[in-house]
Image 1 (cartoon, rainbow, N blue to C red):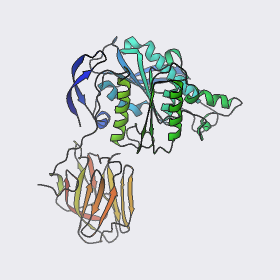
Image 2: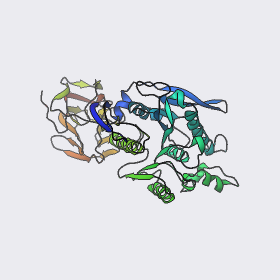
Image 3: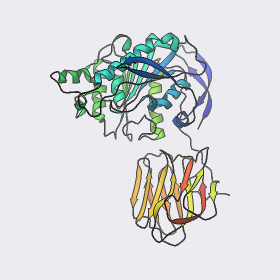
Image 4: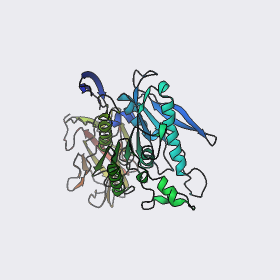
Length: 446
């Protein structure tokens, strides 16, 4: 999924330069990019070191003036870690910036009054930005071009760095991805400990109530289907920024759920990529990034060829490994003879972006990312050979036998990605004449 383009980059000075840029998908950055990530300790608190992950661009040297992209993970202030944004660090470095990911203290899940509080999380992120500024020379970054990007609780902390933070802790630009910006909204106040001054602490921890001018540019990104952080909160924050006179933009993604920028959570590759392309464009046009982006939408080449096959009958589980990966859209066809009583997996493309089909005497259960069809639409006949064809397409999944067909809409048009196909796991059946064709609905050319 890599592409190389010769891109003419129009700079603010109206000069045009040529640069060869290797474009990668977020899958490449997550699974295949071997760019090294180093660990710095930016703070020691409560006998504990707090880490700052650092990923540098090719040809980096101390003293350079690279842009800095600081990523802050989510997890409701009680979970997650800086490794959540490793793919994003590598994207940052590939596009010429130095990428950072911040570890901050987490709250006690028990909420028993012990351990760090939200103001500690905020203080840690402020100290991380101060550390980056103080060490700009050795880190090779421009201390006036520090952008912070956060997701969920990290979106809250990133927004704090552009509102309540002052001096060297204040960000030069903020990208808030489904962040909590009003700690008094719905039940978010439960994360603020009880006490006489609780209302004051709720206000102080809420970016919505701490907007000050001049404000750094803000990009507010939100999923319309987010049931964790409601769109109303993002809209209110954007409206307040705009009313205050801040340079701000708001984008609402119609199909996106919570944490749409996080790899391996609930988002499709396309949703993750679109969010990164949008923040990339936002920062580029404000001088916070240089040159062309390094990320592209994933590409799924198709072929009529049979790319894998197993002719001989087998019982039990069989695994087909394809190191280069199966195509995102394909057709899986096989013959199966179930036992009199059967229940198990007919096939599974393993991994977060794969899918599986379980069959039993009582019907079928097809599962994929944000897709599921469980019921009696597909009833295989025991002790008889029958052909099952599964077409994994952009718009829909179609499962057929000689006499039955069932369709499942692929509403988000996500690809079914894996490098491992497992057949017959836990299924009392014989399977034969398996073939995988490199496009949906394909009969396959030998």
